[in-house]
Image 1 (cartoon, rainbow, N blue to C red):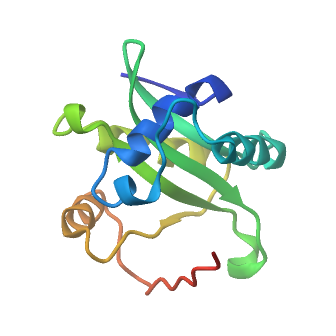
Image 2 (cartoon, rainbow, N blue to C red):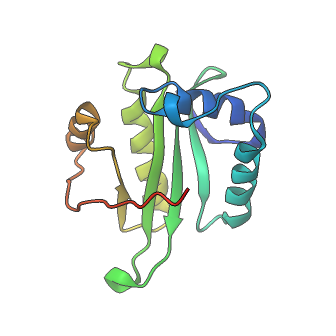
Length: 154
């Protein structure tokens, strides 16, 4: 398994992974061609991203096949004495490749990257109904220390 950051050309594969999920299939629009909104969002991520503070999709590959992805964003802030934190979003593994520890390897790689860039902690939210995901993250050492809140704006 290899890892690399996504390019614009990878967007169809990423959106396919995002839609290959019980919740994602109702939220994403995987069509050919992809809606322009995905390209605009990717371009916005790229424009915000720096080497020190990336906002990128990390891909897991088996050969040339993209089998997993997650968005990794490093956030500078003042809390915790200015500690840098990593935010993980959109973790997905292809349904055809589940059970091969791809998710574990992807999370481990994102932690390694985060540490190398000086992050003091890694954080994410996970849907309350995803009980299997909660067990997965706890097995990796994550603790459900906070209650996440969201407000849908559109």
